[in-house]
Length: 229
Image (tube, rainbow, N blue to C red; front, side, top):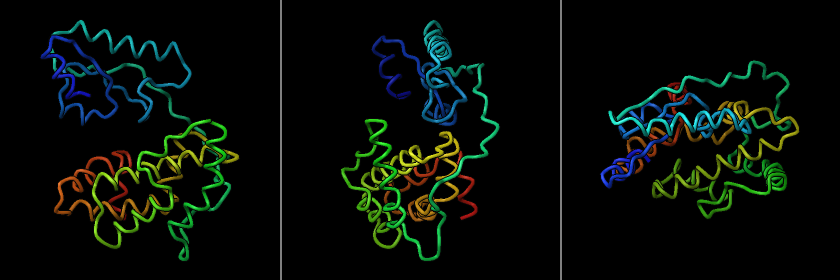
């Protein structure tokens, strides 16, 4: 969106935006950006907190008065981290076991995913056009054989991540979005597979594979795990 902002500005349309990843914004240098320290996926901060969200939107819109861009303004309010995550537990053991497989893990989550969809009435899974076992097989293929096209692989991974996190939201004690992400990266075979896949993609002769490896496969907050894998 930052790059689109440059195009719109050349047409005489002032633009502003909200940045969740400062490094990306510093590289793209959009005309105006409000940098916030909120959790990824929550550009307005606190869910269901209309006054807080209005303050964020107003701060972003206020930047339209500035003509000294490209600029990044820091939003002064921060969302307090949840201090106590005790009591959150996954009701099924998804920790990798020697006999376990990605396919088995995906299958064990199916009942929880169905419950999540029934409760929410929606899902973000589906961009790849694959069912989840097929998406899993594509990732196994990438690990064991020729790399699939980067876009197909990215869409399969995006679907599986959404499938896992939506499934976890239906657990009897679902915790918070933060604890669900911690569960995903700490305990699932899919996460360990993605960490193992990253070096393969990073040395691929295909530029799109390298982009996937270095920018979107592993979130910036989790990249420290690559040194351990």
